[in-house]
Amino acid sequence: MLALKTLNVCLNANIPCILWGPDGEGKTSAIKALAIEKGWHCFSLIGSNLDPTDIGGIPSIEKGVVFRAPLALAIREAKRLGDLGEHVIIFLDEGNTAPPAVQATMLTLLSEWEAGDVTLSREFVHFVMAANPPEIAVNASDFQPPQNTRMVHVDWKLDFQVWKDGMLSGWAPIAQAATIVGFLDRRQGAFRQDPSREFINKPRATPRTWTNLACLLDVAVKSNAPRDVIHMLACGTVGDGLGTEFMGFWEMRERIPLPEEVLAQADSIVFPDRGDLSYLMFSSVAGYVTENPTLSNWKAAWMLVGRTEDTEHFDKAALCAQILAKLLSRPEGKHLRKAVPKEAQVFIGMFRELGAL
Image (cartoon, rainbow, N blue to C red; front, side, top):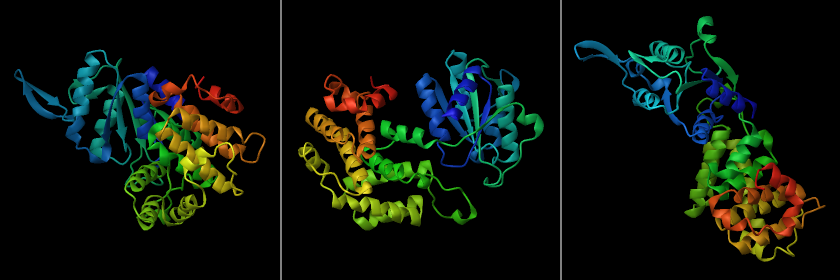
């Protein structure tokens, strides 16, 4: 994802940047994931929830000297860790919807590395701001020309493939992540809906809400929630239209055998005629094997997907193969690395692309 790579360069160069993009596009998650990958600390400050004193500080007396000390724990920790030589990212969210007095303290922080009378380390403290485009932001204020040139401006929109790879790597409970990905893989137009006026006071599809739905479905399935509850969860997360469409996909589970039954007949089971049923069968198998990564399940799953070579089902099985390949890089799949079946050779290119070999 180009924007993610650009963000990483900004952090390494320690030049503040601002990410412009709608809500639910994974800005916060990406920054936190990048911090973990780099071994850095990360703290978030949400502009609309701040008081000017959180960053600008309140007057206090220290050794007879009046001193403005910031109240936000994130600032105090950034000061302490930066002085110890540890890298810190301060993520300033909702930058253009913060009250003017708060916005002034945020802009001073990322341009001068100063919070009240506290000076942060320019070498070890890094800043990223996020803002919604003015046309969709609530009570947004504009950044003036002198402020704009202090930041690198990055347009942010989460790529479907990046989101998909993240879901299959464990962003959400993997069993239901596979089902959500299976639905969107064939219906990518449902991945996001622009935040137009029709969605005021209503849910809509975004990368965030699809991820939330995967988490909700996982809990619902484990608690044997009735169909009506699952339908309400889907509609209440991604909206009535897409929620109902997803439920049609979800309910087709009854038209295919259980994953354990599919694996028991991996060498002979007849693949569904319909493409959507085929997607769902392979997605269900992938999720089941990820939750139950036994050697027998592993071998049976590869036998199943290997049978799709040179058939119309190959692209549907590719999703299952991708999830299985990801399993090799996870701790629970460590014991499988010396038991890659011959059928996996069909997808060897995918293995290399995912870094599993």
